[in-house]
Length: 321
Picture 1 (cartoon, rainbow, N blue to C red):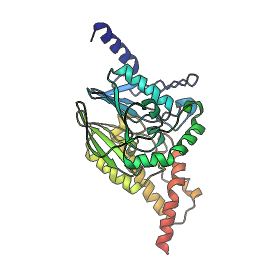
Picture 2 (picture 1 turned 90 degrees about the vertical axis):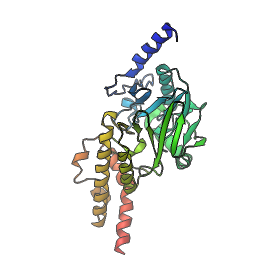
Picture 3 (picture 1 turned 90 degrees about the horizontal axis):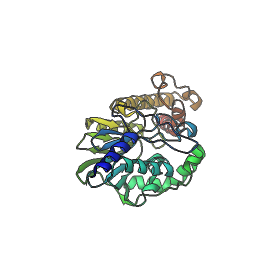
Picture 4 (picture 1 turned 120 degrees about the vertical axis):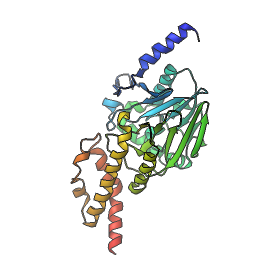
C-alpha cells in the first residue's frame, strides 16, 4: 500500500470510527436524512455501529435504535444486520468502505425483526443469509413491517422494500477467510434467535436475546424459552457482548438485566391473571420500579401487555376449568 493511500485510510478511519472506550450517540440530521453512523472497534477487525438507546423517533434518531456490526476476515467483510431502512443500509455500506478496503462478502441476519434486515437492499450484490425460520418469518411479516415503519419513520424509509435472504444459515461453525465464527440458534425473543461468536476475539453478537438499559421488545416472545436462552448466552462467557439494543459497554450486564425483567414479567403476569386482573390494572405495573428508568418505558411495556398478557389469561382460565 502506498504511503498516500495509507494516510487516507488512517484519516477516514479517524473520522468514522469512534474511540474504543466511547459510547457513540447517533446525532441524526433529519434535514438531510443522515444517520451519522460511526463504527467502534471492539477488537482488531471487529466493529459495532451503535444505535440510539430509545424508542423509534423519526426526529431524534431516524428510527435507528439497533446495534449492527461488521467483521473483517482477510477475505472480505461479514456484516451483521443491516438496520431499519434502505438509507441506513446504504450509509452502513459507505461506512464499511471508509473503514476498511475489504469488500463485503456476506450479510447475516440474526432474527426476523425489521431493523435486522430492511436495510439489506444496499447489499443486494452479496449473499444475504438467515436461518430457515427467520427467512419464513421475514416472508410472512415483511410487508407489515414496511407499512408500520413507513408510518412511524416517514421519509427515513423512502425506497425501502423488503428483500428476503436467499440462503439458509445453519447453526455450527462458519469459516470466512481467517475468521472462525460459532453460530448458535436459540429462541425466546423470536422462534429463531441466532447468536454469533467470533472465536478469535471472544466478541459475541447476541441478537435480540440481550437488551442493555432498555425494556425488551416482545412481539414474538416466549419468556420461558428466552430465559433458558439467556443461560446459554451466559455460558459462552463473552469477553464483550453486543446487545441488540442499548449500550455495548453494558452488554454483559444486559444478560442479567434482561433475565430480571423477564422473570418479573413471567411471575407477575401469571399472578395477576390468576387473580383475574384486567389489562387496565396490569398497565399500572405494580413492582416495576427497577425498570422504569430504562429506555423505552412505558412504551415497550404497554406493547408487551398487548402482546403477552392474553396468553397468561387463557392459561389461568384453562387451569380453573
